[in-house]
Amino acid sequence: MRHLNSRKKLNLSSSHRKAYLRNQVIHLINYGHITVSLPAAKEIRRFAEKMVTLTRTSSTDFNVRRRALQLLPYSEVALEKLFTEIAPKYAQRPGGYTRILRLGRRPSDTAPMARLQWV
Image (cartoon, rainbow, N blue to C red):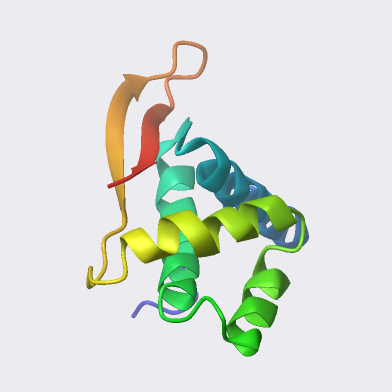
């Protein structure tokens, strides 16, 4: 049985995890790539791909913009970049907007590291 195994907790409280994922997706939108631990990259990928799927259908729909602002309330600049640059690029793609490149292990605690970037 897979009860309560829907996502990784990343050793964070729920509010801290939510803020962490939002901020990392904003950085991914702004810079095009981020380097984090592998479990964090997998969780950030889920959130980022949901954002692109939401925004790729209509950039003028008011309800889509409100929903996107609700999910990423911290940066209006990142949302505008998502709507104008990133989402139109993947309009015809059925999914899989990001890729994870494994980078080996971090020297300090041997955590597996990865780079998350747009395809």
